[in-house]
Length: 89
Image 1 (cartoon, rainbow, N blue to C red):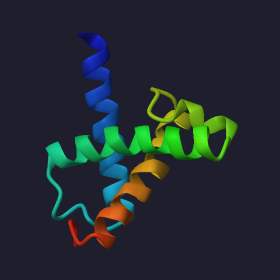
Image 2 (cartoon, helix red, strand yellow):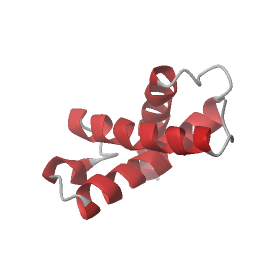
Image 3 (cartoon, rainbow, N blue to C red):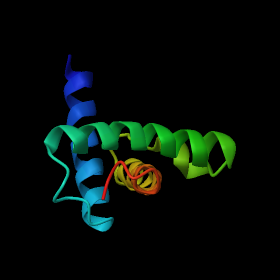
């Protein structure tokens, strides 16, 4: 139960930071920030850790400074893709 709460909180922080950087915060609510944060952290871990083998990316989404930073990078990639697909403005 605590793991789910931490996942939601870290996802919210990651999604919110990424939305501020990409200037999509106005059209995103809390739920979308959480979803983008969680999926973005997974994407960051997969893309940068598993595919590109950048060692530090394996902590993406963890409750640590590097985990949040890599999660934000993954969320930025996700928002960029969503903007290309015109799902976000």
